[in-house]
Amino acid sequence: MVEIAAIILSAGEGRRAGGPKAFLPIDGTCFLARIAGTLAAAGLEPVVAVVRAQDLDAARACAPS
Image (cartoon, rainbow, N blue to C red; front, side, top):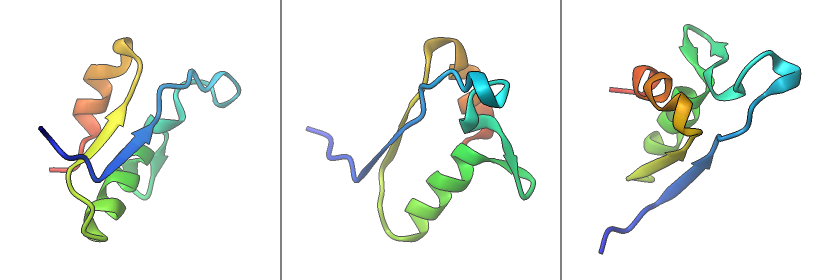
């Protein structure tokens, strides 16, 4: 069994934002990476993000390394 410390719910369309808010740039990175990095820095690992199937490649591209 895998234990998950945090789940980021980011599967919204972001129609009013012009696209998924998870991928909006903030300080040189995407919002999703910023949230995941903050959770990891707080000691919460592993962090899982829930995204739409069509956004999977974008989520992988902005994942913190």
